[in-house]
Amino acid sequence: MSSAAKTAGKGSIRRLLYPGVRVKRYLAVVALGFFLVGFGIGVALATRRIRFELLHHLLFSGIVGVGLALVAFGSWKLWRSVNEGVGSSRWTSRFYSRHLARGPKVVALGGGTGLPAVLRGLKEYTGNLTAVVTVADNGGSSGRLRGSLGILPPGDIRNCMVALADTEPLMERLFQYRFEEGELAGHSFGNLFLAAMEEAAGDFVSGLRASSHVLAVRGRVLPATLDQVELKAELNDGRIVIGESQIGRSPSRIQRVWMEPKNARPLQETIEAIRAADLIVLGPGSLYTSVIPNLLVQEVALEIQKSRALVVYVANVMTQPGETSHFSLEDHVDAITRILGPNVIDVVLINDRKVPASIASRYLEEGAEPVTARSPSKKGKGPHLVHDDLLLEDGVARHDPEKLARSLLKTLNQFHPKWSEGHFFDSLWLDSRLRERKS
Image (cartoon, rainbow, N blue to C red; front, side):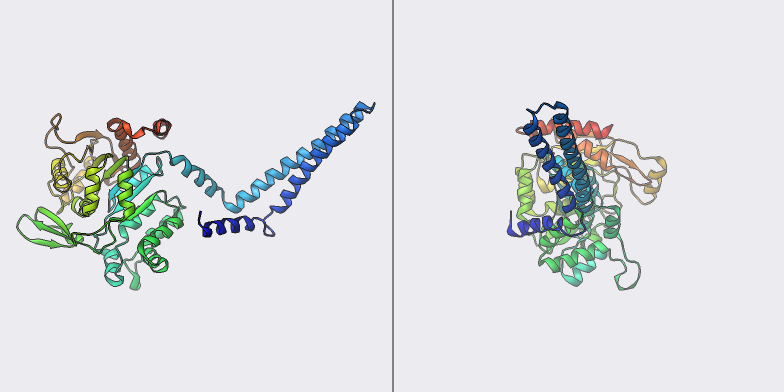
């Protein structure tokens, strides 16, 4: 433990002894109780040979009884005082975090709104979560902050931190609050907070760690790279589109994407997390602007190729107009395979619940349609295809975080049972946790 942590710990203990905290008085009551218990036993031993056995029993029972009552009362009041001072939610959170440390090691890569859905569900089953987030965003508030301050785009990182946060709803609403008027119009408070944290902490990663502490984040959120990168795409008609926000609105089918500089370096923490992972999750999310940009960091792709973890691609529920118009499931997988190479994706997870007609028709008007497989996967060729009900019906066709988490962990148990080697009881705990959450 660092000297700073030790100093902070001693300071926290000293604060419990401040006037008005109601700790010292109850410690004194407990001490008095133990004294009376000891005194009562001493008196009983001293008077056990006297003829008046009644007096002997009365002295022993009375003094010891009063002492035990004082110990019980003082302990109860002391617990209430400490609990009020520290906060019961913090105690609960600490024990729960230790509980979740038994879960599998998961690395999830993506961005946009898809990655937070994965994180929000999985954080209820494991505390060993690492989110690797794309930093190619050049639109909206993130793009403006990137241009004016030269920082990494914070938007997707903010969304993932909020998804992993174990904080009160007020804090979550605060980080997602977006200004509507004045010079700050369009900026979210969370983006500004992360920008300020980078300045205060000295660098972006230190700022993320400090922000994670504020939000009580379960797991880690890491940028795919600390380099300022730019995403580019070549369309079928030969045109070159520059920038994540423009690629997402491509007027023609995307032929390939790449990132400049091509030698962008990942964080060492990201590499270590991938090497230690039991499960690597790609998607859901925008194919070319959220999922693939992480894989264009060459060392990240190389480590995934070498990893012994189960690699799962979570297919989108719907196609995205412009970016993946009329894409089948195979088109999505092929685009990732061109980057990672064959036989890297072990399992493809796809929603098999039909999107309600009222919702599907609205998407169809915008040029989006459900992602479906063209034909059944051939035995022994390509990744395993797993169909499951992953749909959240809330007026929008998207993944249900809870359903998605359960499906991912069941897939891990089915296709990579060796993950539990050396963690037999942890795997039993995970199975019981899945049954408990389902019920």
